[in-house]
Amino acid sequence: MKREADEEITMPTTRHIKRRKMITYDEEKKGDSKYKVDDELITLLGKTNVLDLLHGKKGGDIFVVHRDDSLSTVMKTLAEMNITSVPVLTKEEKFYGFIDILDCLKFLVDLLGEHVVTKADFDVYAADEFKAATVGKLMTYPYSKKNPFHPVTSSQSLISVVELMAKGLHRIPVVDDDRNLLNIITQSTVIQFLKSHMNTCGSKCTMPLKEMEFSDQYVIRIEESERAIEAFRVMKTTGVSCVAIVSELGEGGKIKGNVSAKDIKKIASTGRFVSRLYKTVGEFISNDPVVLKRNDTLEKAVETLCEHKIHHVYVVDDKQYPVGVISLTDILYELMKDTSHSAGHQ
Image (cartoon, rainbow, N blue to C red; front, side, top):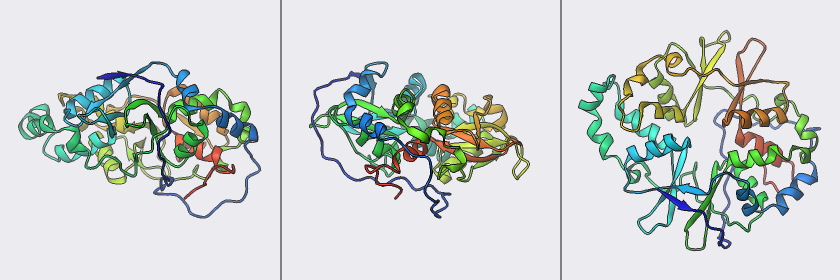
């Protein structure tokens, strides 16, 4: 289902959202960096409003689902639109929240268990429960810590959006006073905007990734010989959305690829390709890894994320061993943390 975007919206009430907690973040604060963001970036974000940003965004349709829609409908929508989340509306057509591919993944991992290995097993043990699953069942509550309800209006400045995303929000709804959904802003849209204005970011552009606060966060890995289902179980357990595929665990393991939550869509919206999950993760994923080196710059990271349309990029050493991972959130946090407008890491 799709709705036409509307521009007639007013200012909603906002609330404070804490930056997401990195599960492997070293709490020891690093010293002041010599790399700084120019005031020109803050000026740009302050004078650019939400509507300006969305005018530069391709497409004008918003694809949505309702609470009584099936899991199959959600997965089909995510696959066809190549997105990782979709807005949920109530019967009254009011914005309720987002359902994320991770919500689908968690349900499927629990549903499949150890006894579903083939399509025949799926038909016997899981097909009925899969068909009966609805958006309402998958969303225990509408606004989790991962997807809190923090709407904006088209008249708000972009700086308020970037501040929220620097604290961990991946997507923000644009609504009117009656909670009618009018549009969505994603981290990817904001990063694309910043890529076009990197000249406003000052010396921060030249900052090596090794100087970033989150550049050395632990990389969750899985051996390429493990089954793909195990990678998704790791995601469910840890709450991460991607896992590095390595030749072997340990210091000698070279990065071979990446499996992300959205890859669960490869089983198809009906589950007819569920047997793919029991291939090795090396067979399940055929993509080459997208990587950067520790001496690569923040600007190169932005360019790489935009070019490949990805949300994370791995940082490797000279032996192709993954030593860190950089996300869209990390980039936005790094650009905003030293400004007077940013609340900083919390």
